[in-house]
Amino acid sequence: MSQVKIKEICNVLEEWAPLKYQEGYDNSGLIVGDPEMEVKGALLSLDCTEDVIQEAIDNGINMVIAHHPIVFSGLKKFNGKNYVERTVIKAIKHDVAIYAIHTNLDNMPHGVNLKIGEKLGLTNLTILAPKSEEENIGSGMIGEFREEMSAEEFLGHVKMNLETGAIRYTNFLKDSVKTVAFCGGSGSFLLEEGKKQKADVFLSSDFKYHQFFDAENDITIVDIGHFEAEQFTKELIYKEVSEKFPKFALHFSGINTNPVNYY
Image 1 (cartoon, rainbow, N blue to C red):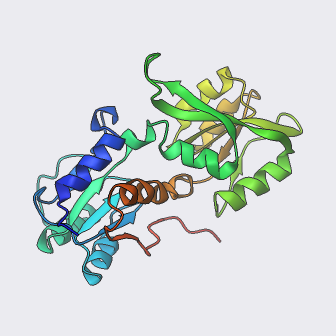
Image 2 (cartoon, rainbow, N blue to C red):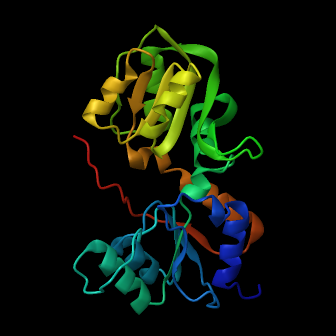
Image 3 (spheres, rainbow, N blue to C red):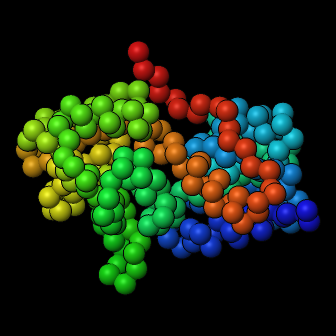
């Protein structure tokens, strides 16, 4: 096939999840790399770490597409004093491009949250907190099961289908679960919206101890872990890029980048 350049991969990703929809604190897009460089293959990962870059190097791959940006704020020095600097230095040394597709994909109706809803088998999925009335774009989603589940069945269903190592949750307010509001990644800011829309459960991650009290006996908080809530994003990216470039070499990273272990 004809050569594929980095900018062509970027164009596909940015048509699918435009950069203008990323949050103000975010740093999605091409972080490292020459847009004109030929791509020999892309490695898909939730996070871009030193090990992931090394994996790309070892396999002759010169692009990493990650959900989380390795750089959020400006780097003033490149001394290798932390994992961010070391990852960027290694990528530059070995001509490995790094692309991040983060909150712009979170905010898409076909993005991270749709994948969670599909994994859970929810129906009637809609955006939980739309950015505007005109566009079907925004944070989180809400949906419902075709049939109610008991609280115990629900927890088992989540653990199996979202492949969680542990679940933290508040008391269930009733015996069954029908409507679930949820958000991939850190979604505590959407808790009140989940209450407003009368969800039985709000599922997300990164709740602090005192935030669990905010359930206020109005909703059940279910925290499944940040990595667990977004680990299937790689599948989304694979599907989109492979449809546009069916002969392009795409690989799932074999590195588990989750920094949290469970005992």
